[in-house]
Image (cartoon, rainbow, N blue to C red; front, side, top):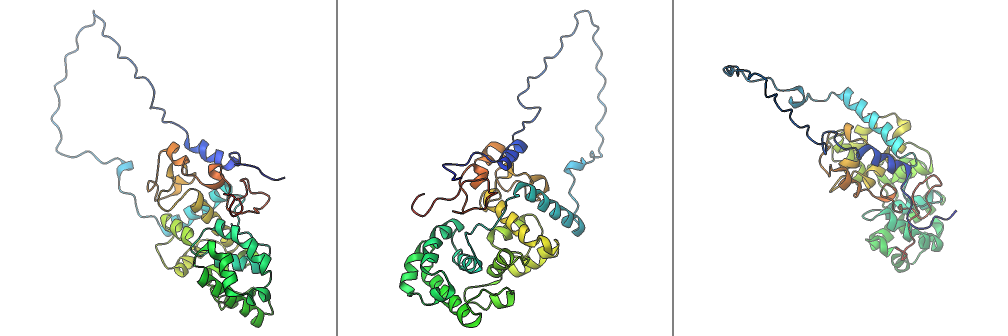
Length: 321
């Protein structure tokens, strides 16, 4: 059935709201009036105040400096975060529209320095013109540039697409290879793109370290590395290999919807109790909920053709926004 208009609030978004909308039991309540002294009651003499001790009172445990988290405790917390994200985003998926490995490879290359939404709005015309590696390798550069112009850096991306298509035609019989060491030999393809293709087109587990993934795993103290290869290695050591691909989707989903780069919605985050960086963003629940994006905020997603279990509305076509 075709979805029309803005999606109704989804079950997971309701869960976010229900977790964050509670009020402090002490706020808004009226102060109890002081009881009046009985006119016949005898005045109690005030006790002589004792001299203050020179020894300072002990600091409450809540105010004491927290002990450094052990590696084992971090691993347990990280795995719990992954379980919480799995409940929050049971529909997590790659947010690029594709029908085969070649389309996913091309779309991932185009996604550099732009949004998945803009790529999804551009690829229908691209794949209609060049449905196979052989067709794309024979494209006139200027014509391809005009099609992919909305994604930005269109000249450099055209060069990469022509190069990888020619390499697939000449070196791999027109087929996308299913090994990382082969994929990274293609023009414009690095480890991130290779892991996206392997995990989602071939079922080979892989961790995709994009800007969202790197930002969140550093906020969660899973790693302090900046280099994507080192980030990938640190996170891979925490989780079983079978979790790598879906973990990547969940973390990226959370980064795009709640844990934003500039102003994370801390007050609307269901995993806030597990986050050592809680407080970097908006902590007021009402204000935080206004920062939620896509289906979490009752708005369309990024895919024009989302999976059947996606609870939000499809993205609009190019020019229909």
